[in-house]
Length: 297
Image 1: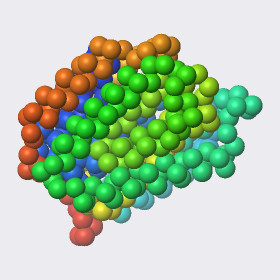
Image 2: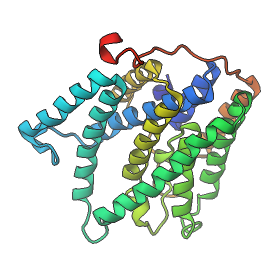
Image 3: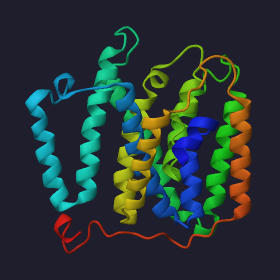
Image 4: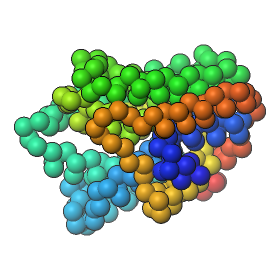
């Protein structure tokens, strides 16, 4: 439902799912693990659709070398299904982003060292967000989520003039990764559509940077809250089906951001805040436990 609504309203997909999880009664720790997992898998689907690859065109593990990550994935899955699944997706994302990186104009693309530095800074921002969650009272977490959605809508309104905020845009992008760690919203589609007239290296590589940071944040969140959301996996499957059938929202990269989309996002956030969801907790399936990972699923 989030994928379909996002496609036809333009509202960020992760915003929809965040409100749905909290409305279902998810606690802060449950929410952030589910959201980061959903974002990682869903954007893997989006990028794999935009950049179709086969084993022959892989860059890091071309051809039969792809057996190496498959064996590692199986080994990790026997210890922890969570780590096995995440590693498998990470490998595919690395291949996709390697293709995107190598296809960029050498004159404007950052060095690999610079890309790692930007990913490291974004990862720290995400980790700070994940860490801060534990200090937010559970019953007020939905207010933080609603405020984050409203904040991003205001940003899209202000960013209509492509000449404004150019010197602050990198700071805004890094701040958005903090929001990703705090509530799980990945606003890549909105932010990329409203890119500044003069793009920085971070802006050009933002999808790579935010996904790398989200994976780091996901692993930390799992370690902190010991929660693995099978529900988020099913949500990811549903989103993948929705993306395959209906595509992803398309945004104009010129002019102002859609006023209709902004208005719908504000209305959705206000209705969500009025509903005042209570953190009763959602069903957790013990995929990994002390008695032994996959064999005791």
